[in-house]
Every structure is written in structure tokens, then in C-alpha cells.
Amino acid sequence: MAKVNNNSGGSLFGKITALLMLVVTVFFAICLLFVVQAQDLSDIEGYLKNDEQSSTRDLTTVLEKAIDGQYSVEVTEREINKMLESRLELNQGGVFASSVTLKQVLIRLRDGYAEVIVVRDIVGKEFTGSLFVQLEQLEDRKGIKTEVHLHGGNFHSAISSPKRGGKFGKLTVPQGFLMLLMPEFRKIAEALEPEIRLGFKQMARFKVEEGLLTLDPRSPVADGGPVNESF
Image (cartoon, rainbow, N blue to C red; front, side, top):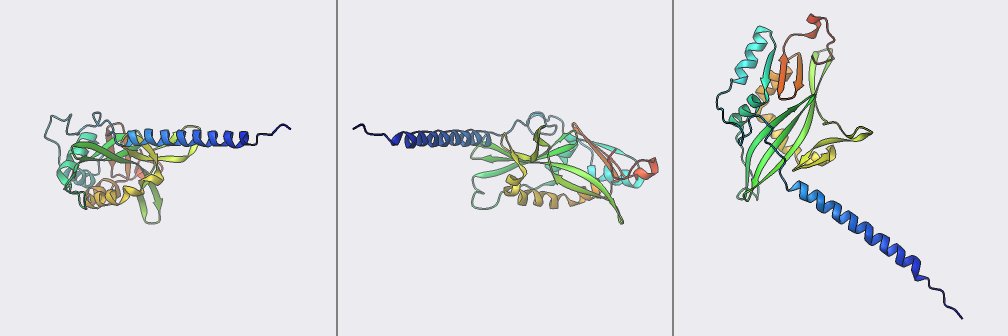
């Protein structure tokens, strides 16, 4: 009597499972490879490696005068980054303080949004972590207010969710992964409270472009424009 082999189905299932595990392992290995590689910062004006100039305007004074005189002012990416270099005292705390050094905080300005980047040196190797932010101005009974959103656009034009949140090294990650970085970025925001207040809370309009931030303290109502849009 012939015997029926019932192991073919189980064998096939085992092979499929092994293949899926291999694909997942390779995927995470590739992601890890991108995470440990610092993103290219050479395009950022004010980055230590490509900035040979030293003098910049005092942005606090520039913003105060623009508000007092009620005129618009343009601030370059380089000026923002040189201000961050001079204003922030970067200290790495915790158990890794002896082997980790906070090198620099940088801003990359793009059309419609900005990328905030923290650069670290870990045992002689550079690592980066960043988040994308968008600014929105809204009008309520108290006037115009500025809100900051974590949003760097969609991963793909055909997919509305999840949103791009930032980068771990060269790897772009969704917003949910940024919980690991938020405490550090909140401390940076607290240290820059005077500049944030002058640059956004006391400005009626703003425009973020490639390498340039334009701010205007004049109400858009005076120009006949809508109050809930940037110029």
C-alpha cells in the first residue's frame, strides 16, 4: 500500500517562514546601516566643515529693530546656524558622557519647512539625528499665533500617512519614532526662548525658503491679505 507524505505542506510553510524571516532580517540590517551613517551636512550654510567666514549679524538685535521699526527682515541659514553655535552650550549628560560629545545643532531651511539636526561624536565617529518642522499661523480672539508642527511631508505622493518625522542618520523615519529625540529638542527650544519669541511669537508673517527665512512684524490685514497665511 502506498504511503501518503503529509510533510510537503509543513515543509513549504517552513520555507516561506524562513524566507520571510530572512527578508525582515536583511531589512533591519539595511536600516541599521543607514542609521549609523551620519547624513551629509555639506550643503548646510554655517556647518563647521564648510564655513570659512566668521562675522554675522546679531540676530537678537536685528529682530528687535525689525519689530520696533515695523519692517520685514531676511535671515539666512548661515546666520541662524552661527547664532546656534554661539548661543548653545552643548553638554552630553548621562552614563555616556565620557564617550559622546555634542558637536553642533544645525538648521537646514527648505521650501515650506525646516530640519533641526543634532550632530554627535561617538568614540570618534559622527552621528546625526533630526526632525522636520513646519510653522503655521492661526488667528483667534487674542490675535495671530504661531504653531509648530512635526511634519516634513509624505513618504510618497500617493500615500498620505505616515508623515515624515525626521532622520536617524541617513534613514528617514515616521513621526512616531521621534519620541526618542523630543526631550533633547525641547531643551534646545527652551534655551532659545528669546529668539523664538522675537522671531515667531512677535512676528505677524513668515516665509521659509531654501536657505532663507523672511519675517515681517506687520499685520497682513494692513496689506489687505488674509491673516491665516504666510507671505
